[in-house]
Every structure is written in structure tokens, then in C-alpha cells.
Image 1 (spheres, rainbow, N blue to C red):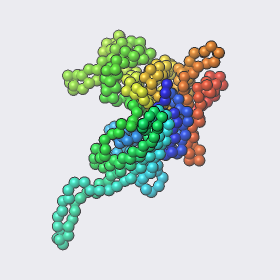
Image 2 (cartoon, helix red, strand yellow; image 1 turned 60 degrees about the vertical axis):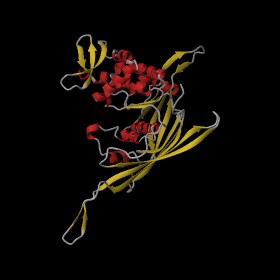
Image 3 (cartoon, one colour; image 1 turned 45 degrees about the vertical axis):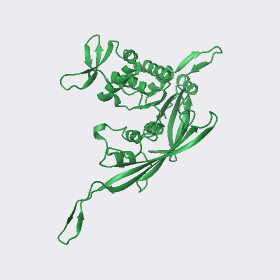
Image 4 (cartoon, rainbow, N blue to C red; image 1 turned 60 degrees about the horizontal axis):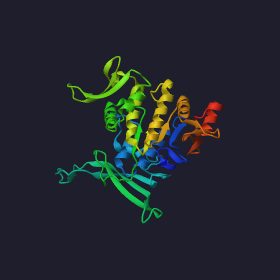
Amino acid sequence: MAKNLEHLTIHQFRGLQNLELHNLGTINLFVGANNSGKTSVLEAIATYCRPLDPKAWLNTAWSREIKFSRKPQLDALRWLFPQGSQETSGEIMIAGEGNFPLKKLQANYEEIEGTLGESDQEEDLDNEIISDDLIERGADLFLKVTARSHAGSLFDEQEETIEEVFQLWESERSIFGKKRSSLSLPLETISPFSHRIEQLQVKSLSNAIEQRFKEEIIKLLQNLDQGIIGLEILSTSRDRKERLYIDHKDIGIAPLSAFGDGVRRLLYIASTLVKAKGGILLIDEIESSIHTEVLDRAFSWLIKACQEREIQLFLTTHSLEAIDALLSSTEGTEIDNGHRVLDDLVLYRLEVNNGNNIARRFDSEKLHILREELGQEVRW
């Protein structure tokens, strides 16, 4: 399978500094101690794959927060950029290689002030003018990308540079600037708590049903509960909101909320990956809510589904059981000369050294030796 991303260098993004990810696989697993930058890597990939879409930048900035308790958009966006100085500005730089034509992304964030609305003026007793203009906090988001372009013939590869400026204001939900660019990859992000938001579940399953993928999802869920025989989206007469129900052979049709987190987690992963066809799927804490007894079967299903849809996977985990399950799920069969064939699984252990982030790379063969033959710890 051709890879959209083969190499990635994150010069600056959140707390990441000069992180090199060489020879990316079709399945990429990030491990490391707390605060080593695992989630930040996924967020950097998300912005890189939709570099000129300001809404994607905001969604990335808010990705770790629950919708109803999000910090203001300017504060969230600012923390994607390098911190540590008195100035509220900084630059993000990410470079990459692969089938995706983007080669370099540069972004700057600069806070500004201005007035919104018309002025109301009145005179005081000394005939001095008092202005009721409100000073509004805003920010300019400067985006610059360098991408491959083909002109003349297949062998005449050139580069083009695109620059955009988007303006955001503290009290405004809209973003001022040009329309979203076509320079983007299909990309979906799954956080550790996405499956608990029923509106997301309904939307993702609706799309999966349109893509005739419902039966495959049911087969996956049956690894957790063999009594699951169907999935339905129904609206009640009380509030007319669409909700997701599971048809179970023992208890009948029951709301999704009646089932455990494991069922909801796998359902959301399965229905979401359909939208990432030909692109990137990011899953933070892949093991979250999934019982260790079904990790092997769930991961085997996930990897096969992504291979069929040419999806490049990027995952994080804290779990040694998840690493072993992924390794087991990606083992191939033996070929004529007796050598084992392994699917393209790569593990990156993230570490921090003298302020720089380091990724120690383990391919499938080395990972197999370390875990299955030597039983060594590979997370830290």
C-alpha cells in the first residue's frame, strides 16, 4: 500500500521540538512516558493533513476538551504554538514526504486588537468626547505551505507556495479569510472520549450505513457480545432526536447507553474509519475501554478494514497488552524460504533529551524479537 506520509519532521508544535519520524509504516504506534508528546504528534499530523483549513486548526486545538467546557478559541489556538516567551506569538514548522503533495507547513499566530461595531459617543461636562468603543482581542493566523505540483509532464515536478491569512475575534465564531483549500487528505480523529458523544455516534453510523458498512460493524461488535444482531437509528416522539439503538437477541431493541463503553468505543471506531478512506485515521489511546480479552480480534478487524480502504493508521497507547495484541494481529504467514512475513507495523518510543524530542523506531521484526522472544519492555 502506498503511504500518504513516509517521513515527517515536526520542528515546532505544542511542546514538540525537532521530532524526526522516519520510514513511517501503514500502522504507526506511539508509546512513551506521560507528557512525552504522543497526543501532540497526532494533533500535528491532523493540522499537516489539512494545512489551509482554519476550522481544522480550531478543531485540533479543542480536541482534548469536552465541547461544553472548551476554553475560548483564541486561547486554545495559541497553545498549539511555541510558548515560553513574553510574546503571544510563535511559529509552527512541519515538513513531510509521501504521496500527499504537501512538503512543508509554516504557521504563525499573532494576537491583535481592534474595535468591533459602531462607536457611541457622548459629551461629558467639560465637552470632552467619551467613546464607548470596546477593544476586542483577536488574532491573525498566517499559513504558508509548499507543495509539489506537476506541470507539463509526469516527470516535470515543480513546487508551489500558497500563503493565507485568517482572522479570528474573541467574540466571533466565524473565521475571516478565504475558503478552505483543496490541499487536504481524508482524515478522522478519535479521542479517548469521542464514543461517549451520542450525536457523533449517530452521524458516523449514518455515514457507514450509506457506505453499506453496517453488517461489518455488527460482526465486530459480536466479538464483545454475540447477542448483538442489529443497529438502528430511531427518533422518539418525545424529543424527535435521533438516537442509536442496538437490536439484541436477548433483550430486544435497547439504547446504546445501555451497553458498556467497549461496545460504544468499537462502534465509533468502526463507523468513523469509513470516512478516512484513502487517507489517515488517528486514534488516541487505542486500548481505551476495550477489554484485553478482545484486543486481538478487535485489532485484527481494524487492520483488515483499514488495509481494504487504504487507510494509514496512527495510534497511541499506554498498554503493553495493546502492543502485544497489535503485534499478534499484524503477523503474516510464512513464505517458501521460511521467513516470516509481517505487515507494516512500526512502533515509535518518544523521549525527551536536552529539550528535543526523540523517536526511537522499532520495526515489526525487531518488535517481535523484543516482545515475543525476549519479553522486554518497549514503552519506556
